[in-house]
Image 1: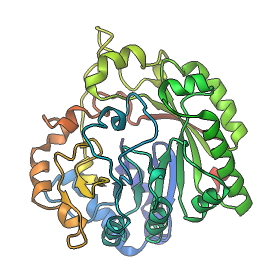
Image 2 (image 1 turned 45 degrees about the horizontal axis):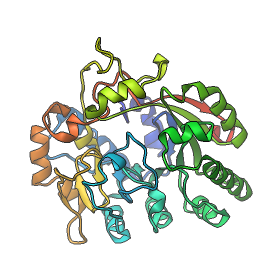
Image 3 (image 1 turned 135 degrees about the horizontal axis):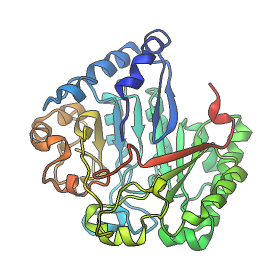
Length: 376
């Protein structure tokens, strides 16, 4: 996905410099960073040079972070790396002290943090504390859930009060039968009840956040329920409904094309080759090791979320070393020198789901469901 594109930044320079605000989209969702400090603005432009110069030692601080609170989940979705690689990674939860050190070091420069990776974030006992601490640095915090957790009114209140900006809820079916074809072990009624509770508490507290995004991954077995999920989204009074293409690591492409790729071309992220069971290769360019810093649940700084085995970790974060020194350190420099924009033999690049995609973003369609999401 392409974030902070130059053609989107240039018209916003006056707004950025004089009003200290910056608008951007991530997975088609609209965000706005406000009350930007001058050092965040300066670093935004300075660090932006990395995507043009591609230095092995990046300049400035990263403006985007991805953090993995836990690397385990309570569902068994068949195409998810958490399910596929459960035996290769010991279950781990990122310590709050490590997260705090990470935010203390680079939070003054971050604009946006994606607080999930390969597990269910709300299984972390300190998830609300993590969100609140990141928000203390005026960072936009975006996270996701499968919704199969306990969101009673007390926890929904914590979700609203911690300052979370955006919450994605994965719902890939409008009926229990269709939903559990992919979200194995899930309970659709529980998910819907949790969404209603969060919306109720938001309304009671008069809060616009978190913006609730119902995400529907379009697959062969559920594309017939698209009209039903649109109706359901309106009934739930959520903020957004988004449709996402189904993606898979290349090792599964035969079964993936046969069983999961939808018939509707507008919702396909890949094009089939003449063999039907394989996808066509496309030109690919990746800037991830320069534009984003990624912290795994083990406390290691890694090149991106697809290094799920931490094979190419740049280093382990502790309170004595800063994440920036690790990100710019020798292991990181060696990795970037051989990276070749993602066209290499690293297993994480070989397995990358973004490779061969025919769309700029996995999220291909968005609907606003309430007026709240349009407030200035």
